[in-house]
Image (cartoon, rainbow, N blue to C red; front, side):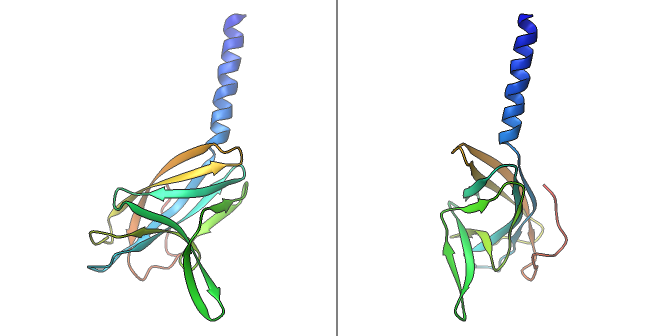
Length: 153
C-alpha cells in the first residue's frame, strides 16, 4: 500500500514537471555575418503549453545577447530591446526578421553559414517559474528569409 502511494505521488510529480516543461522551439536559425560585422539575429518559433514569456537569451558566442522587437514607427523601421516576449498558451510565436528576434551583439568573430550557434532561452511561466531551453541554431546565408527551409530542434 505504501509503495502504491509513493508510486502515485512520484507519477503525479513527474506529470507536473512535464507540464511545466512544455515549451517547444522549432526552426531555430541564426543569420550569417560578413567579416567585421558585430551583430546578428537569431530567429525561431516558440510554443508554450501555458501562458509564459521569453525573458532572456544567452550564447557562448558573445556575452551580449538581447531580446528585441522591430516595428514601424511612421515610415521608419525601429529596433529596440524588450523586457520579454509574451508566449500565450498553445500559440506559436514566431521570432523572425522584421519582428521579434534575439540579437547577438559585440561579436568577436564572423558567424559563418553552415556553423551552429548554441543558445540558451530563459522562459518564465505565469507562476514565475523559470526554465532554460538549450537550442542549437544552424547558421543560414545572409539573404535567408524566415520562410526558408526549416530545421527542427
